[in-house]
Length: 202
Image 1 (cartoon, rainbow, N blue to C red):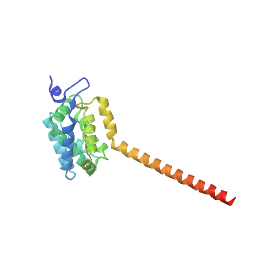
Image 2: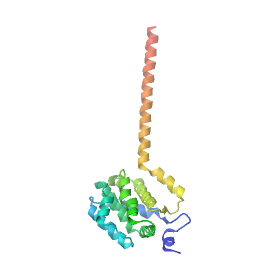
Image 3: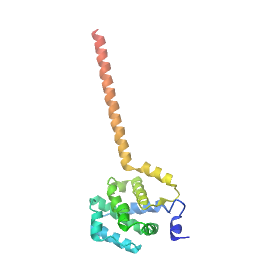
Image 4: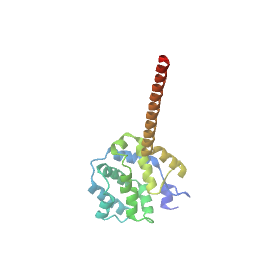
């Protein structure tokens, strides 16, 4: 049995990682999150890559990859880099690096993910277990790993249910629909009052 099988419980659908400790680690990192520090992120990511046998990005490569991040994005990136602390994550990334170039892994699972999740601000993550789970699941998807105890379809359904951007869009649609209903009711009431006034004059 390979190291990946021992760590992830490899099946025909690929490796798996237990979601609970991943979420717990994200939540703890969010609570401990300090000010944005791009230089520290660059150094930490390089050290972690070396520790798992991945050739780190050059400083200017990292800077280009992270160029679209604002302060909150760099703080979120720091949280994601901290997931290297988990042995199953290190093993998954080392395995992924056998087929993917490091710059693509960094762009997909770290700088890119930090940039794509602008709604998952640190203060939002600090207040919501669901948002923490959303970020953890998006990280697993980015490194091509499933959640233990779930089928791929289970994971997709759960990810869709947690999608914060989608939930906000649905809330906006519901709010707009409610405004439309209220406006139609107002117009109907005005029409009814107008008809009653006309009948009284007759």
